[in-house]
Length: 149
Image (tube, rainbow, N blue to C red):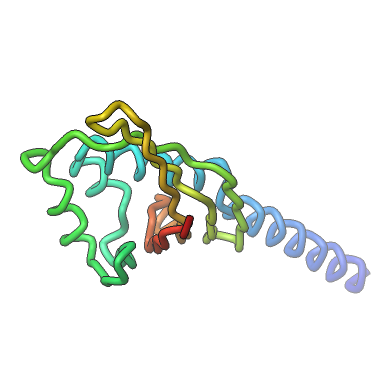
């Protein structure tokens, strides 16, 4: 009788543990949505959104190779500094989830109409790390690399 109880208890704990682990897994669509929010906020110079979605420990490798803190990134996108710029679209996003962390890779394709009316396009490859802390998912790092033509 004790063996059956222990077996049942072990099965119950294993089932409970499995459900908790799977419940804690970050949703890939949530990770993509955060990346989209970041791109949209950067284009709109929406520092408030960046302040909200970037983790306090956020670090970014800029397209020119600088390592920027959250404070530096948010300050760069101060609405008072807004100027007209390109439109951007995310493409080829790939999300890999590791429990409460996701790594997103893909392209940011920029398009800008030049004064002569021609459209100029350029692409950056991006990688983002999304992590859930205390039940809230945020971007903890990003890395941008320009794609050569």
